[in-house]
Image 1 (spheres, helix red, strand yellow):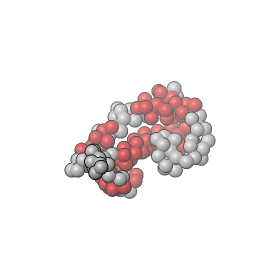
Image 2 (tube, rainbow, N blue to C red; image 1 turned 90 degrees about the horizontal axis):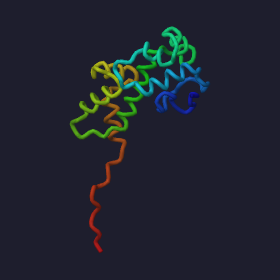
Image 3 (cartoon, rainbow, N blue to C red; image 1 turned 180 degrees about the vertical axis):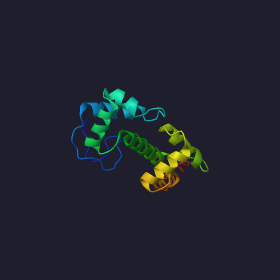
Length: 152
């Protein structure tokens, strides 16, 4: 797995990430595993290291050297990036914003919506509800279900 220069290698978003060098195989295993399991609230650094077939300390060193982060921060960032993608793609019905955010938070592995909101706000400098509302206003409305009758 090589880091994409145009976007995040972890979730496909457009966030800036390291320079484009290929990741070492154990780190590739860890990232691939994380992308498959980020929604499981019970995962942690130890399970990620086991998936990569390295010790926790080795995983920490790999993350620091190649991604300039810690494994715990990597898990958080992947979850937050996936949540942002989901928020930007969501189309909640009116007055269901809170439920939509709660469902997205749970879907990316957060047990506590308030913890999710605090981490999301700290990372993106806006509340999840702001992202969701901005996404709602930037998407064109759905076409009518039934086209108007042909006047002919």
